[in-house]
Amino acid sequence: MTATGRGWLALVLAAGLASLAGGSGQLAYALAVGLGLGLLHGASDLRLVPPARRPAFLGCYLAAALACLLCWQLAGPAMLVAFLLLSAWHFAHEDELFAGRLTSLALGLFIVGGPAVLHEPAVARLLALAMGPQASLALVNGLANLLALGGALALPLLVLAAWQRRCPCLAVTLPAVVLAPPLVGFALGFYLLHAAPQTGVRQRLLGAPTFKVYLQLTWPILLGAAVFTLAGGLVFVLQERTGIRALFAVLAAFAVPHMLVLPRFLQPGAEVAPRSGPQVVER
Image (cartoon, rainbow, N blue to C red; front, side, top):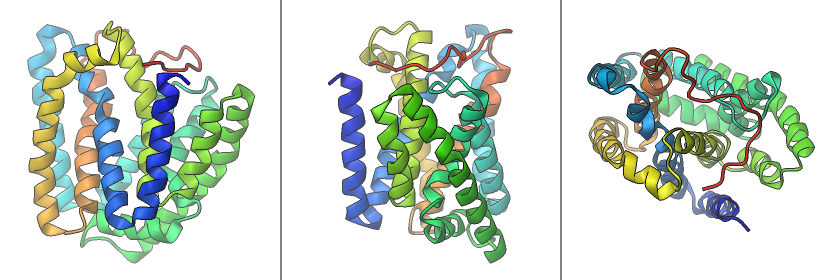
């Protein structure tokens, strides 16, 4: 088994253990995999920007991240809806697993909606906690219903594409995302279906021959991200003790600049995720 295969197996097994561990274990898995490993690909954003534009890029990136945290405080429901829509578009746009546009769209819908297919009430509870005191029952239930519908429509398309590729990892990952508790399912899907392939893309773009070299190139940003996570997350944890709102708010604070700010600072014609067809990312 390759290193990629061993890593995939370890993450799926850990997801099973976290699912059995209850709420604290599931949140820990989401933090470690969704927030920790999941943000590795974004750690190279600064390296992709031309050196002369990096000071302005950092300023805009931090301003957007802080604005996300502020908006989550002032308008949590609107921010959550916008975050989910942007995420689905981003996952579809930067899909490295499937070549077809329709399948890529299905992937974007599935990563955000797959965990709700069998766990719609649990997802609704998570959405209510993430939105905060401004959440309305109608919005929470309606959004959970839409996520479940999107995930259910996307799943058969992805299963067919995985079967056509004869890819056992995908064939197991897709049902695992649906069957696992929502926090675990989202973290697993986000990392294995988006973040891990994109980390491989970033590794190639930076010319890093190994994952260790990639970490050596990006560790200052990772350290800064850890400090930002602790500071920003603490504000929300003090308000809402479960940590769910903090998790969503900090994820958005990293994801929105990654999705919206970075493309505006790349060199003209540069493409972060060239659509070169399905790939198997080896580390």
